[in-house]
Image 1 (cartoon, one colour):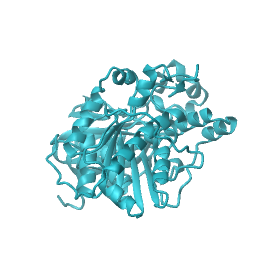
Image 2: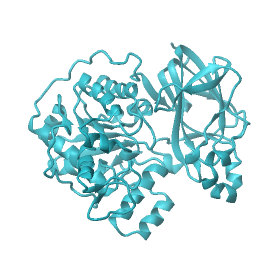
Image 3: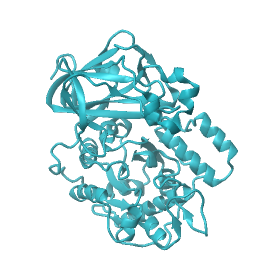
Image 4: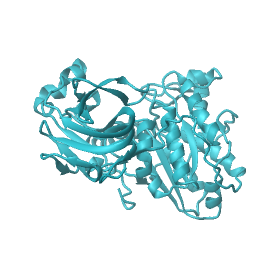
Length: 468
């Protein structure tokens, strides 16, 4: 998506809901639908006129933000009145227009009214740091951001992936400042309210400490408000004057997102007041030698060979991620690529017709043998009778959605072939009895077998034209 594309394209369902609802709560629900069910959001954005300017308020708690080395390069540039680029990378809370992102940019614009601020939204619903490490180069770093907010605590908080994101930013763009932000889910408000920190966030704090990065606990204030009876973390409507944070316990409604953004605003004010010019610090040794610093995502047309039967298509709602998609719809259609590294995968589009794939590595059929890393979409492979990998899941019920899956191998050079399988999954069983309305009404959609390939993911480097 180029810089001139500033307006988000909403799905038809979203437009109907928006037209039918004329209040802020309905707008927030619509934003959640757009983030969790729609396609790719435009990369470049500006907050709309309806985005509120959050207040730092009277809340103060030393646990909310840990400044460490702060954001000195960002503030030096902004204080000098120079244009700045601010990037956001994370899951659905980042992708959403209610979560915190537009409100944060609105606050920065008020903080620096004479500064041109360009903002980038690299939020991808339902994904964690393993995909984030693969896509940060293309979606953020090539645009040379001055500041990157990283939000993945609610999506697995995979520490090796987070370290890969941090190291890629530091190695590729040493002048870019980084701020880790921690959203929370489920019962985690009670953990904060009891004076503790969720375990997944403790793991990310190790990385923040190691690299001297500021971090912000966005959920601390909402958790304390809930403890005081002033906030309802999850519900359908506000009651007794309490703030309704979310409908689902995960994705903030507008008021919840405003609380998240206010935490960032307070932290930015603290860092601005003590900002001092600093040279980029040397990159320390990694905490995890097998982190995802060498991860990337690649245009399949540039690194793979395709059998006959594939066609290049465009899906407008995903064009911000995949300008062109390679579509296979005949069993046996395959593509092959080589790489040197320890993991590979695909970033594709799931939908009613999504089929199954068969994987071959170095000429041998493979099967998955379970998750390689908890809380991720990273799986182990071993040689054996091929069990197709299913690209259809419950999120494919009458909608399309970006999805990914990665597979680990022993480090080395590998030739990978991925083939569309002739076997069909029992999609009705996958959806379950509560989600069969559309498949019963339109079985022809689900009876198809299709792979929509957007990107090839590699932990390592592709091998092209015989180069090692």
